[in-house]
Amino acid sequence: MASAGRHRTDEPASYPRRTVPLEGQWRRSNTPLRQLTPRERAVAIAGFVVVAIAVIALVVATAGNSRPAPAAGCIRAMVPGVMGAIELNLCGDRAKRECSRHVGRSDPGSRSIEASCSDAGLLKPA
Image 1 (cartoon, rainbow, N blue to C red):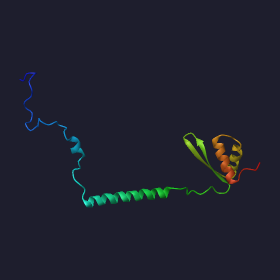
Image 2: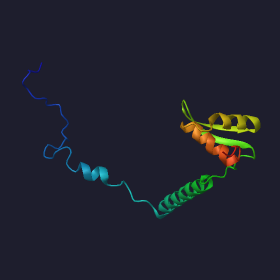
Image 3: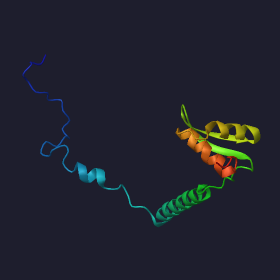
């Protein structure tokens, strides 16, 4: 039985006692294991170029507003809702009824509806 004050002697003999264990750690962890071959480098560059072109094509394809204006006698207005904006699309008598209900009001939804009614020509001149 070993006494409490004694050191262990069963440590491996190959452990170098003269160096600090983390000496050179930064250099070892930041040195690449190997250099890329010219073929691997070309594949990486080609992959980057393909991804960059795909991103640019996606941005160009989705940029802009390609949505047509509402048909004659119809309104499209964005009004505030519980979870954000709600798009209001109305045509014919329903559009005229909403225009007459919201004309002259000062809340943001009414102003948006009034502007859309004015663009559609559904407001009577004062």
